[in-house]
Image (cartoon, rainbow, N blue to C red; front, side, top):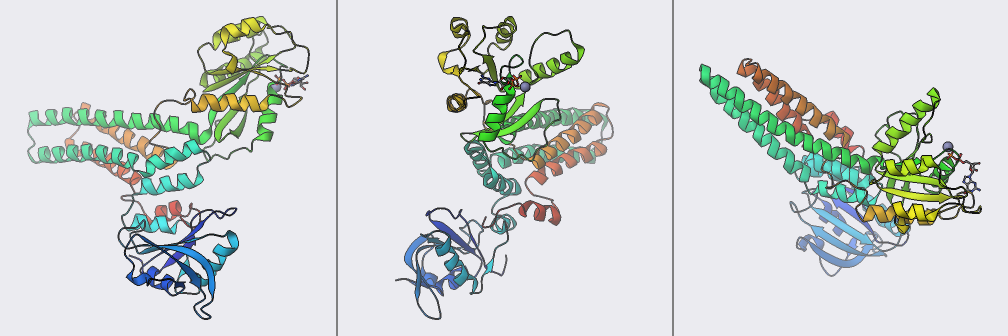
Length: 458
Ligand code: GDP
Ligand code: ZN
C-alpha cells in the first residue's frame, strides 16, 4: 500500500461537460473533507455514497465551486484505496480551481497512469487488464473502444489462466513421473506432454488469429482502391486522406510498392491502398505492379472499384468485376461531371444500387455518399471478421508466440523421447511466458514502461 494521496482530473475537460477529479490514497477522505462544505462530514460518510456541497477555500471559508462528491472506501474502489471523486460542473476553469485548492492540501498530482498502476500493484487488476485500459484511452474508434472494454473485463486473462492451468497440470504430471522413472511410464508421459502441448498450442493459435482480426481495428480495415489507369484512384485517395485526419498506428506497416494512407471515416479506421491499376499487360515492369495490386486486392477487407463514368465499361473492368465477385466492394462511378457513357444495366447485374456511388472527385461530389456506404457496410458487420478480438496488444502477441515456440520445443523433445526433465524446462518456460501477459514475473522496469504510457488521471 502507498502512503501518499494522489489526485488528477480523470475525465476529458471539454466544452461544458462534467469533469471528475479523482483522489486516491489513505488520506483522501480526510484531505477532501478539509475543503468541502456539506450537510455531512465526509469522514462519517458510508462507502459508495454521493454528497452535494461546495468546495471552499479552507482559510477564507469562501465557497468556490458547487460539486458532487462520491466516497468509495477501501478496498471497494478501483485502486483498492480510499477514493474520493469530485464532480465539478464548469469547464476548465472550475476544475482547475478545485485542483489548485486540493493540491494545497497533503495531496500531490498523480503521474500519468498512476491510478491504474496502483490498481495493478494492489492486485485489483492484472497486467493485461491494465494494458487494456491503455488501449481504451488510446483507442481511435468506437469499435476499437468496445474491444478494449471487453479486455478490461478480463476475457484474455481468463483464457490465459486456463491455459496456464493446463500447463501446471502437465508439469505436475511430469514431476510425479520423474520421481518414478520407469520405462513405460516415460513413454506414456511423453504422449501426455505431446497431447497437452498440442492442446495449448492450438488455443494459442486461436488467440493469435483473433490478434490478426484485432489488427483490423488498430491498423484499419485494409481497403484497396482499384481500377484502370486514369479513372481517378489517386485523386480519390488524396481527397479521402485530406478530408479525414490520418490516424497514427504504432504497428509498423509492411513496405510494399503500393501507396498507403490511414484515414478514419465516421470513426472507422481504414488503411487505404492505391494500387497500380489492374490490367493484363505485356510490359514486365508494369507486370510487377499488377502482381502487387492483385496481392493488395486479395489482402483487402474492402475494395473500392473506381470506374470512369464518362467512358463505356472496358473489357478489363468486366474481367476485374468477375475476379472480385463475392468480395465486399463499393463501385465508384467517377467523373460524373462529364457526360456519362457507362452502361448502368451491366453494373446493376453485379451490384445492388446502394453499393454504386456516383461521384466527381474533381467537383468534390459524392464523397459523403461513399463515406455513408462504407459505414453502412461496417456497422452491418459485413466488413469485419467474426468475433471481437481477445488480443490487440503487441506485447501480448509476442509473448503468445514465444510460449507457442516453447511448447513446440517441448513437443519435439517428447517425440524424440528426450529425458523428461529436459522437456519440463520448455513447458515451464511456456507457463512463465503466458504468466508475463498477466503481469506475473515481470521486472520493475517493464511495469514502469507500461504505466508511463498512460494519460494523466487514469
Ligand atoms: P488514377 O490513374 O486512377 O490514379 O487516376 P488519377 O487520380 O491520377 O486521375 C487521372 C486523371 O483524371 C487526372 O487528370 C485527374 O485530374 C482526373 N480526374 C480525377 N477525378 C476526376 C473527376 O471526378 N472528373 C474529371 N473530369 N476528372 C477527374
Ligand atoms: Zn494513380
